[in-house]
Amino acid sequence: MNKQELLKDYKNQEDKLLLARVLDKIEFSKGKNKIEDTDFLNLAEQDLVDKFLKKMKYQNYYFFGGAGEAERKILILYPEKLTEEMARKNHSKMISVIKIKLPIELDDEYDHRRYLGAIMKLGIEREKVGDISVKSRGAEIIVKNEVEKFLMQNLGSLTRFSSAEIEVKNIDDLQEIEAQKVEITEIVASLRLDNIVASLARTSRSKATQMLEQERVFLNFKNETKSSKQVNVGDVITIRGKGRFVFKEISGNTRKGRFVIKIDKFI
Image 1 (cartoon, rainbow, N blue to C red):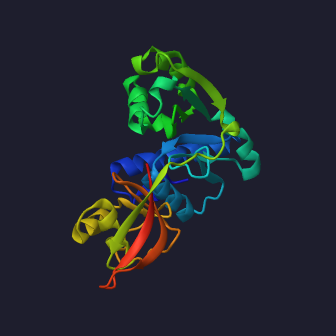
Image 2: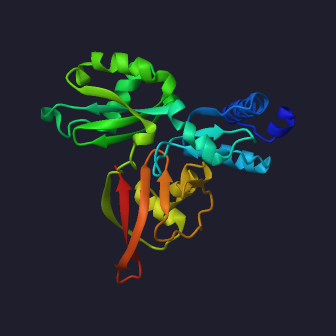
């Protein structure tokens, strides 16, 4: 495997470092006949890695985040002697779930940022933490196994969690992440991606085009840079820094022929 040749077209240093780490794990997986996994990757990183592995025609991999709707996922690489089905039986060796249950007086008091902030305060790198599913009286936090013990020992020392019940759950016992959504109504001139991004991000079409060019927009979890791309009912739109949305339905048209659309916004 010629790493320099494989990486020569990647100018961004962070991208190159990430892909180099992936190549190292592929070599280790092949050499030791072992399953290898990465830290949690965001959507942009997943898209970068997926395209890279497809380009080099590597097939023994998949992404996993704990549940079907998970946004942050680890990359799992497995040797040729195993099938993906066999590899999937090893998830509990890679990631786990920390469940926090708050006392009733704190019902609906904490949001996603509050939980993530607590973990960051303890010095844990963001890459070690996956999705955080916030409940009315707590949260389920997906983490790499290597930080699970530290978090269990230290989360309770934080004032905000001093009266909480904290336990570890096996990732295999995690049900589908219950995504919290709110329905919003938008009015757009067309179903082009730049129009919809502009509306969702509360910005101009020119700024929306810039966001697309900066690779900040994902359509159905794949990076999309084409402004004229048509968006269909059921599509998932993710805008880095703005959130994730589902195009739910077209509910009508205005007198001027603009589209009235229903969007589910993840909160």
